Length: 280
Figure (cartoon, rainbow, N blue to C red):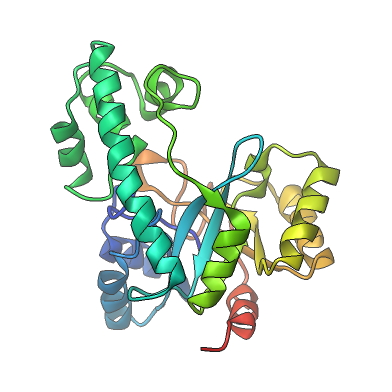
């Protein structure tokens, strides 16, 4: 069993890279991927702990891409820190994220909420600031009753505190991933808000552009949905991947390996991805 979608304190998760690996071992996994948003900084620590515990660490990241009507999240695998076209784009996205976060803090303060950017940095441990960290401060200060409440009232798109972030075209990320020896896959495809025919057409186009996989076994999807997405992936020659989307206390219903409780991503997904890995 494997988990190809987790987040650590290097982006918007509450647990360290080492703890992600430890939780994967406790869940009986053979492989776990660390896929922080736009970030590769936690990979070395996760890999070191994985080597100590005898589990495979698949290096990855998650990138938000432009897509109408919302956004498309792309999980990239086999991406390592260093030089490369995808790594360069991640650096640019991280710089934009810093600008966005400061703007969001200013906007929330203007709303009269008890929050400063320094407090948000503290919530994030000084790195990888994301909206869940803003939510955590708001909950701690009594301005929201829960993480979800903070998003619903202040942080989600369309709310007073929301600030949009830079996004890139999914085809550009697919191309950059290939140029860096990595593979691109679509995360939690139902979040795209497409009907069945629209999703089918979109995946056909992206498969033609070099997309490698589709996250069918997602932590919050039920068994019939997973099976339907596996069939869709196979129809377009995509690897059916999967993962919990673990964020620790920021998404408390999702656990490493088991998602909402019944997730079981087959080992074959890693083998199929490995077979498609671009030659260096």
